[in-house]
Image (cartoon, rainbow, N blue to C red; front, side, top):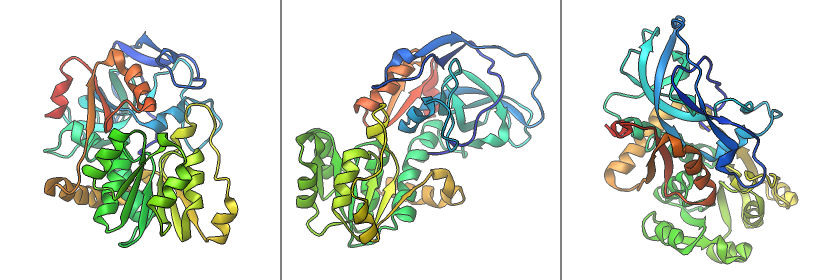
Length: 353
């Protein structure tokens, strides 16, 4: 997701940071992180550098992968004892970049800490008139991921059937609504009757499947009697297996996330590979950064949906730097409603302005 391939550099210049104290084993626990004093630096900024007071942090499932030991060169690995990587936003407090003045808000791949020095080129300016919360929420990497997954990777067409796993989450809920707006029949998979009711009554899914009820393959077959043309997968594992068995010929599987394997149980491909072959079915993973040249187009389309009421967006906005690890772990227990954003304190609610 996002700018996950860009690694922030430079020394932090404030008082505290959450560091990765040990690698997670099994279910994610907040005690793998340790709150530590943050090294200070009085060195002048190098040309092109900026100093950012970080104010807002996005909690994204993909961050769980970054806690694993080095080994996959396509995404970063946080060293033990280093501040946790996270999509972040803040205000520039010092600048040696003429295109990024003091007082401007930016987003970046940051760290769980209060201040960060990094090249200005590794940040994105928040457009005038847009709050930092909206830049990282309604118009941030999660809704953009849904947009490109539906329209570019899935190439969803009117009259097709779209199946979305993790459908009540930040990405999944937008994918459901974009599918509805594209004229598809939309079937959502989520955990629990409350989430399923929200998906049908508010998000507009044609049907919702509660995976807690079991017998997922049979439930998909009932909800998708004509099969599945596009599967937007945020979960993987047995959910992916069940969806593959329902795919139509020439179907497309959008690989967005594998949250079923993030807790250390491992990630694997689908069991029924021959169905993919004989069905001429494609599976494709992607990062939202792959489509950076089209972000403005996607944001304009999302804005039209928000403004008209055709797309309902939810963010779960929380406060307190000291509670950041606990709130992050809530993400993996389904204890969030929408995009999980953490505002540092004090005075962080100004990020909404």
